[in-house]
Amino acid sequence: MVSGGASWPGAVEMQVELEGEPVGGLPADGRVRALAYPQLVGEPRVGDRVLLNVSALARGLGTGGYAMVVALGDRVPADPPAGPGHLVKARYTALQATVLGVDDQESEHHELLRDADDLAGLPVVVADLHSALPAVVAGARHAAAVHGRPAPRVVYVMTDGGALPAWFSRTVAGLRDAGWIEACVTTGQAFGGDLEAVTVHTGLLAARLVAGADLVVVAQGPGNLGTGTRWGFSGVAAGEAVNAAGVLGGRAVASLRVSGADARERHLGISHHSTTAYGRVALSPADVVVPGLAAAGAGLDELDDRVRTQARALGAPAGRHRLVDVPTGPDLLDALRGTPVRLSTMGRGIDGDPASFLAVAAAGVHAERLAARSASA
Image 1 (cartoon, rainbow, N blue to C red):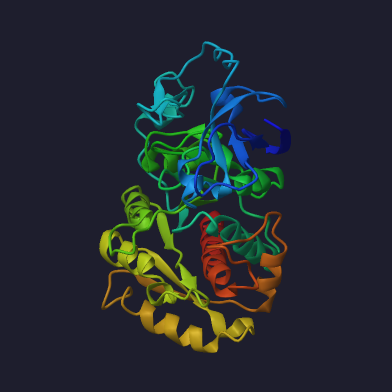
Image 2: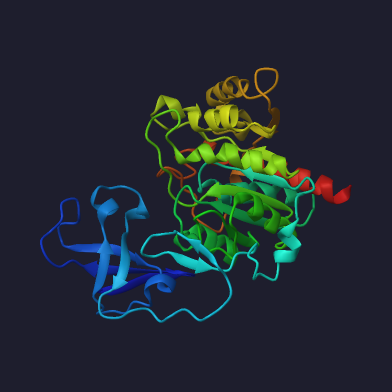
């Protein structure tokens, strides 16, 4: 390890000088940016020898441009303190983590969750990409401010379709520090959240009953796996999240993955990921939020027409969902520019693809209205 870099809860960035024969695809100067999770490998120091996994980095795949620290070469991490919990995540890998689940028999919340079965109409915003999270919350907070209501208490339920450690997400760390999310609940094989849960179902119930959510955002962690096929993408799980919310009596709000800048036809307008996940996988009805992009004043009139046409396949009578039209004016764009974390999706910021962020922010606007209506009932 040559030098340290930025750090945030659960993660430490560093510069590492490589030893041995150069590996194709890695920087010519023999230095790489690496990321360590101290709870798994120990706390790195300048001068440490580290064992790296560079398999994805060398091929330019995922991991945010990082090599991943597997171990400190000359030191082992301290043994974790003895404690309750028997949930094993990232199971049967060398870095599997044993955590105390909120639904674990040893958890103080076990009795609360043991027979829990009802979200009582809790709005659950479902998104394909992790990058949607701050935009959804921005939309919800904007809607509350416009109507003079307090900002909603938002809980993020992270699925395991992308990064497994929540520690990887600087977005989660930044939103938590800013008070924009109350908690992160990691589900399935994902871990490192404020609360751990076995499934999306118990994650949703914990969001309501333990974390006191006014609304929930469900999305995969950073990263997105796709193969250019109809079914081979990690966002298929968005449809299953709609089903989980529905079967538990929540109000599923399906946010659309929209782009006006993606060069791939299958992602232009409404992505085929959204039409497949919501049109084929989601068997429970949801509110599909159709953003009124023309009102944003960003030259999105043509895209607005395309999105509206594509959305018709999801709503009755063609589909099973309820289409909800939410205008997205310049004030919502301004609200998005005020997020405490950087907005970026597929390498594009808000100026490069405003429709991407407006579409999911509109879902946040609708969810906040549902939450406010429920609170006043």
